[in-house]
Every structure is written in C-alpha cells, then in structure tokens.
Image 1 (cartoon, rainbow, N blue to C red):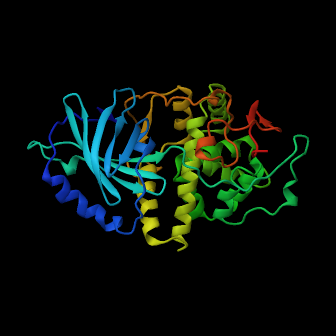
Image 2 (image 1 turned 45 degrees about the vertical axis):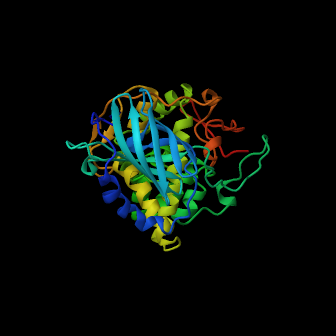
Image 3 (image 1 turned 135 degrees about the vertical axis):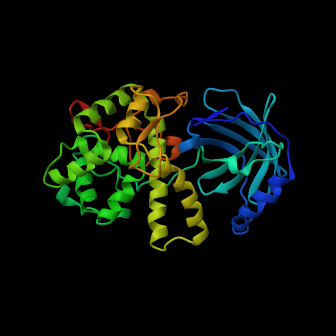
Length: 373
C-alpha cells in the first residue's frame, strides 16, 4: 500500500495498545463535540490526495472501504466511541488499524501499522485529512446579471479593505481589482494567503490575466509574487490554458474552495471571533495543507500532465519540491470536461459543473470566467 511515497507492508492483529494510547488523546476534544454520523463518502487531501473513503455507521458499528489511488480497496470495520471511531482495515493478508475523528469539514484519519509484536505502532502512524463529499461550503451572495449587461466600473463599487473582504470577493472582482486589493493587504496577510497553495495558484492566474504591472499593482509587487512562485505570467498562463482545455478543472475548484474556507476560519480564529474547540479543529485541518505546499506552477503542471507529482519537503512554501510516486488522476465528474476555471464560490457539489461565464475576459487567448450570473 502506497501513501504519498511511504510504503506500508506491516501486518498485525487488534491489540489493547490502540485503546490505551489513542483514546485518551482524542477524548479531550470529544467531550465538546456533538456526535455526527460518520456515514458518507470522503476525499483525501494533502498527503491523502487520491484516497477515497466510504463509511457506513449503524448503531455505533462502522463499516466501509478505504481505496488508495490506483489500488484495490481495504475493507474497514470498527466501532464508534463518542466522536471517534476505531477498528481494522483488511485487504487479503494485509491488516492495519485505524482511528478517525470528526472535523467540521470531514474527518481526520489515523492509519496505524503493526509493530514487531503485532501491536499497533503509534510512532509509525500516518495522519490523513478527508473532506466529506457533498458538503456545501458557504456561497457568495448571489449577484444576478444579464448577459448583455456590462460589469460595473471599478470606481462604482468600494473595494474590500481587509483580508476577510478580499476572501469573500475573491471571485467577484475583476483581475485588476483583485490585484489592487491583494496588494493593499498587509505583508502578514499576503503571506498568510500564500501559505494555501491552491488559493495562491488561482490568485496568480487571475492577477496574471489582468496584464500586470498596472496602476493598482506595481512592478515591484508583481516581482515579489512571481519570485515566490518561481514562474512568470506568460509561462503560467500557458499551463492554465492546458488545464482548461483538458477539462481538468473540477478537482482544482474543489480544493480552492476548501482552502478558502479554512483560510477564512483561520483569520476569524486569529481575531477571536471563533470558539476555541472549532479553532483547534481548523488548525488540525490546516496543518497538513501547509506542510504539503506546492508552487502554483507545479500544481498546474501536474494537472496538465507535464510533470511528475511533487510535494514540498519541509514545513512550508519555502521548501524545495521533491518528486513522489505517481497516482491516478481523480475520476472526472459528469460535465467536468466543459467546466471553466473557476466560478464564484460554488458549493463543493457544484464545483464540477459551473455555468459558463456570459462575458469572458481574454488575456493571451485565455478565457477568464466571471462570477456566476
């Protein structure tokens, strides 16, 4: 079994150590969490990218499948204890232990091999983040617009002044507006945005489409942005065009939406606008995303099939990219081949079938989708 370059080949049986070592850790948070059913289909994120988890819960019994990318599925069986569940994963002679816990947008999954004594080896456990499919992320306010109506000039509407306003208007702003608002954020706020690689990838795409530098985004600001991503606008837009033409937009849109939600909650937690337990959950979802940061060019190259998968070895966006084992592309949803990159704040279930933009902008022959009409 492969998991982002790690080889699991351990076998074992259920042991007391799983209960003794794991449950005390997770019970600290379980007391404050309202139990929700684990039943559903989940998609792996970051180090679990390409994994698919199916869970059915009946009377505290847990059953389902964990399918690694390009491999046959493991059968999952266990039981629920409070807001957590634990049990066994089996595929032929292979056996693993698991422990999973609820998160606001999905769950955290601990995959535990067996040690030499056939007991769970907690030190070698691998933590995975999963997003629940069908989860509806917050929508942007609807803005109805006739096809023949020209978008309002920049000066007719006040632009957002802070990072939360920037995130809420992320897909409604025109490229030059977006660049202007981003450039007006504090250095710390811009750095925070850049820690979320898929958000940064779409941001770079939109800014480059506005043909910078310009009045709202200086040459120096552009230089800093491109230096961080180690690419140029012309080169990057060519990759974006390949991804669009190949119809590989659904997965990208879903990940951007997820990261925007986590980023927004991170800001609210920092401002003291969210309760402590929720902020702990958000931190647990955020950590693996930042640890697996990839430059925008690498994300688009992988989608376009121009380069092998890469991951960042280290703790953030300044780490060097390292090649990892290839995995299958996630299956396309119906209609994804005709999707455009990306529309204004769709829900997760809508991301693969966004409506076409009535008034596409162009830059270098590329279509830039506008907000949902």
